[in-house]
Image (cartoon, rainbow over all chains, first blue to last red; front, top):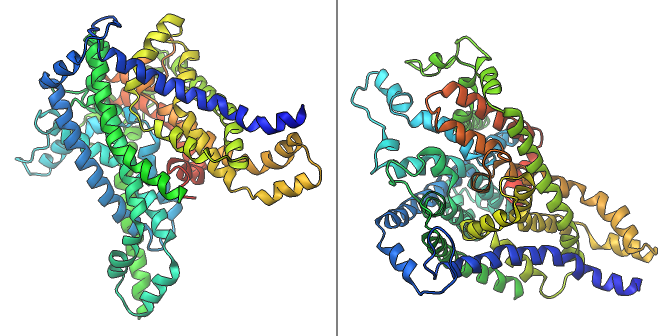
Length: 290
Length: 276
């Protein structure tokens, strides 16, 4: 009996986590997928009607804006966070004495809820109180920074706060990557008198390709899931200028009472995530099996 | 000569790094400062950075007018409860994957982790309906379960990476000496796993504490934690910056302090163990 137990315990103890993930994630996604094919409005219906919800979705100018915003936000957010993160990582790599404390400070934005830190950002970006006001008071009367209330620019205001939140995190990832590069090669290059910017650009950074990939994946899925950021800063406004797919879905499900639209937009987001994550996971798994 | 330039360079780098640190910390610092100002000073023109009269009136106002203690209590119960529950379920799973791996272990692990990447909106509505049916909408129990479930893959994965670092030879030696599975787990694995479990615990408490998507969607008045409190506070009273700042400061203070005293765990936790 004990022997049988010892042999099967590993599988038995893994089962709860496995089943929980399976049911909780895939089971409920299946439900959402099903409902996205029905005429559900205020209440879910279960007669499959085809792609009607998706037709409505892609005809909706609001969802169009949300997808466009995701594209703008995602691209800028990933690009700027990566560049800043890398630069700060290289700076911290210069044997700075208080590195431990600084790393924590750089990571704080990621450790705090954006819903809460959004308070400060609202103040900073408020034209009447924050940066615009300050610079005007310094004598630059024509200075303007009212992105957060300008429908055309509000999404860029969200990019700023997003970059603030994520670049310290990316820095920490890159710093780990910089540290993992073989010290001997760097020493050899230094002995040869190669300037340090060349060492970084020709030796260290190219050898960090896997870290770039994982940073990209993490940032990309953060961008697609972004919800708190928009809720905290603009609530999706002005109008629906800063809607992202996640806030669109939220609005459809809870204030518009349109479950069908909510479900179909969730499925579209899912498809975008899959398009990015699946190739990555596939390549990861292949590497590990070889 | 060369030496003095490098010292200078180092000082410059340090100053620069601190400059960036200040820039990053500014919004947080600003919130804390504003929370101690009167409403008039908070929106003063030009903004006052130092030398204002410190006041606690915002804190007393927030505490008096809202049921802050209840939101705080909800946050503690939900973040703590979901973390402990998650760890109880995940420790055996991670143990099994790390020490009794099968051919599929890596696949299962990657698969579990991949679910974390999927947008939560995909499962929001069915869970919402299920909660209504079960009568656990806007309850701490419901939210604790959901937060446990969404963070479970991360907990399993983090514990797995920590367990992986425990050398297998020690276990073999214990087995040679005739230790049973139970003794092996209690006397050898647990003490060695405590630092890893602590890091996981910390990260998960932070993640659950900050969680806004689920808390905003699944709670209303009764079970709402601090994130929901801030969100509700900022809409109707959006212009009361000092009071909003006081509420915000009270919501982030635990994490600021916790993070400061466990810097190592914070860094390694937030980077999912990439940085030790």
